[in-house]
Image (cartoon, rainbow, N blue to C red):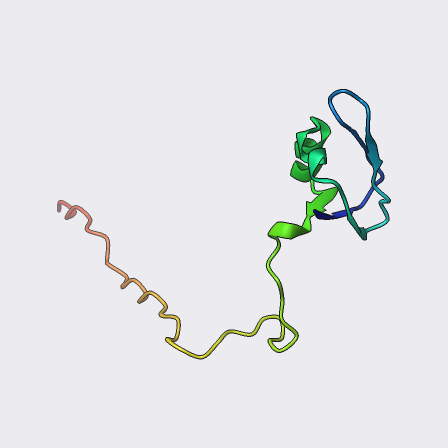
Length: 92
């Protein structure tokens, strides 16, 4: 599994026989699949300090960022018409 970590983390197997320490510093590295079973893994993914790159979309160099393919144009909803408020008639 490929991961990107902003900080260093040490993951351990449940029997503590193996350990894996991430490098941090926004480096991309290969990590063993068993780190997902460590209780620390979902916590660091939730706060954004570890990003699992296997699930990230691949950006092609042929399509610049912000590029939208040609096709059906986006339709904007029609603006609402202003409706005058009904008020009670004044007594004379």
